[in-house]
Image 1 (spheres, rainbow, N blue to C red):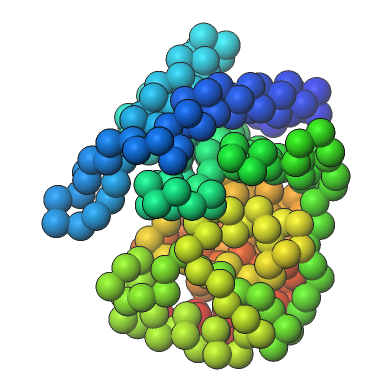
Image 2 (image 1 turned 45 degrees about the vertical axis):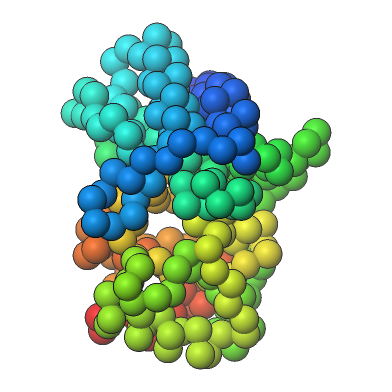
Length: 270
């Protein structure tokens, strides 16, 4: 079953309400000395009260308004995972940035229909920026101004502005993945790091051209798909496969099909 345009308009408005509610929990805790817990043992995978409290609020709202919809969240797992509609939420994507006082973290809210991303929202509360993408395209809002999202149109690697969260092989990349990323970076015009989901928002408004990542999970990428594709971009795994089928959460997002193919040529052998 597929939702009609009016339903997606309703879902989009609701996603905005969820993001507004998440802001109430995250913003007062940002640059306020929030306690940090490492949830990954010997590896550093931080979580804060901002992550947990924002997800609790969002879950309560979804269950109250759409009690038959599923919920998949980073902090508290899945509810009604077999539902036709599933909300996929990451209350603070980029918690490392959050605990360092860097404003590139974001709240991610995605909606899947029959397992496929249908709507996505990227929200950066501190800079008051929001991207919303759906089957009808993508829009960007900052403050009271809103405009249509459109990627840059760059088709060649030599002109590409590239990003990844952390290029080191001891971070999100294996040694082989780090080498493949380095090959792409060597042919690109410039590379910038540590942007997390914010990079995909910048790609959607033409400020970046290419994002290459690994180790992303469902909650990390679900909301990104509709924003990138709604702006005219392309997002797949490193071999061109659909997200969810890619090994180790390897994701590449590009401004154009030609640029995407050029990046895949250097990545798909891994």
